[in-house]
Image 1 (cartoon, rainbow, N blue to C red):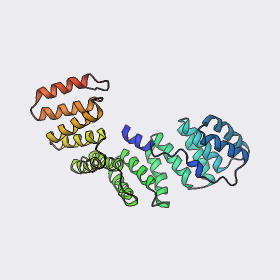
Image 2 (cartoon, rainbow, N blue to C red; image 1 turned 45 degrees about the vertical axis):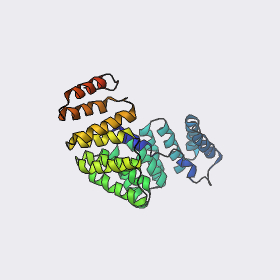
Image 3 (cartoon, helix red, strand yellow; image 1 turned 90 degrees about the vertical axis):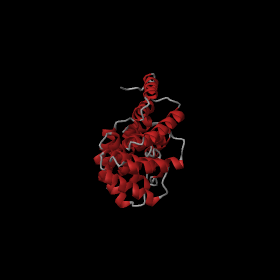
Image 4 (tube, one colour; image 1 turned 120 degrees about the vertical axis):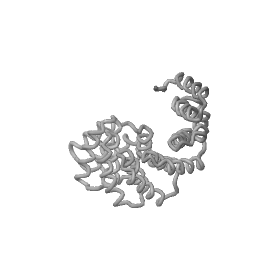
Length: 263
């Protein structure tokens, strides 16, 4: 779940306000925008509050919402994005920002509602489909998530990251054969990421392919320099299934010495 949320966070484009129209902005509004672009969020917030008192515009509410987002005050960000959308319904960037705030609040169903509008209006916008795929996965709407990943593939060539995400959807559906296929594709693109080997190793375990699981967990340990206990624990499980108790015992001992070890 943490990995999925990280993937969502990476979708946020913090500089998107730079592309919004500034032709009709007042001096204070331009000043606030400049402060935002410089990541001086508190100063921007103070300035935009002054603007809102005299000119409560769509852009002003949207910018204050972004300031609230930067302060991790997601509920207040959502309120301001809602105010902006009342003044300019279904505006692309603000819907996107609000979907991000919903995701940060853990309100994935509401995020999907905003993303539904965006994908309908902009059927070739990759990031909207990917964000919805991730949210649908969290909501356990696995078929919807796979459909969104299919749209991602239609729009542009798939990256290792997206293929791995799709593999995790298959794994969540207990379709480990297809999960292995996806993880193998991801490894063919980038064979240096320890997490992909771990994911594939888990699916191999579920498929009772214990030798393959041992190889993947070993590769994970090698690439990750043995910093995480999980791969040792899972490799121990595979060794036990293979009738190798000494190796399993050693892996459990190694795991117990690592900070993130859990029984």
